[in-house]
Length: 340
Ligand SMILES: NC(=O)c1ccc[n+]([C@@H]2O[C@H](COP(=O)([O-])OP(=O)(O)OC[C@H]3O[C@@H](n4cnc5c(N)ncnc54)[C@H](O)[C@@H]3O)[C@@H](O)[C@H]2O)c1
Image (tube, rainbow, N blue to C red; front, top):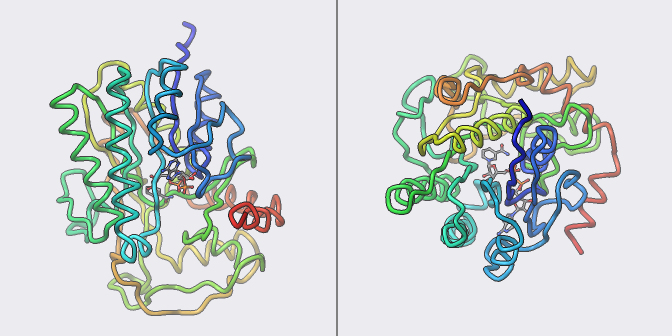
């Protein structure tokens, strides 16, 4: 049977996860348009589909995009993503992540789009009360970033009830890794994620790494996180799209592996992979970092039939390392792009 080509609008498609999504949609034979204001994304990360440069808060632009094509679904990756910054500047986070998302949803409804896949986060849970976090765990986010995502999730439930908008909120744990073909990878600026920082420290292209906290109640005292490959995240979104288009109901699902690694275990794995030492110093805890964040991913398996393919730590690190090595000048170009 020939697969059906779907039209998907990808908000935030020039970012890390959105750009991998565009590639995955293309590989599945779907048709996509990316809308991104390039505040944190990169024009050249949109290798598949068309890029419309603009802000999701620009109603006129959204109207034009939604009038030009009739979309089967929207995937929404656009967000501010730095937890610490959200504490210092909550206004920007509630505005960009919540207010503009509400405005986006209202416009989508006016144009008859009723299928929506939302990038949520494990940060909605707050401090875990159980070893593995299942979707039934209370949502008690401890920072404005997590709360802004949780507010969208609640809005999505109300919009389903009142307007019939069907959505899947995907609560990612720690996204990591890079496109296995080496075309795309992680380019946050500033970068705050452990794996690219560790790889850059090892290769000498980044500063000495700080391990934030070594007195947590874990085996080696450092935090434990659940790393999930960006390609596996993309495949979950594609399955969520199929689920919604087959009449699936609104739900929130964890995307993680169920296996946690401590920060020090990740550094040891990076040293083994690269054959280089990761220069690091041991620092104090960061406020708001839970000791352990590991998903119970069973619901995504049951509801979507999702399973991870590249999220085992050696594969994930090898993909990220290939990306980091592929172009040592890229970071300088990225900095220039965002300073102009
Ligand atoms: N990276 C992770 O580990 C992780 C974990 C959990 C959840 N998430 C969520 O996944 C999504 C994508 O994360 P990412 O790591 O790819 O981040 P990213 O910063 O690389 O991508 C976000 C993209 O959205 C764009 N954007 C932001 N505000 C916009 C606006 N108002 N209008 C148009 N475009 C806008 C940015 O330019 C950027 O390209 C985010 O919603 C994030 O909260 C990420």
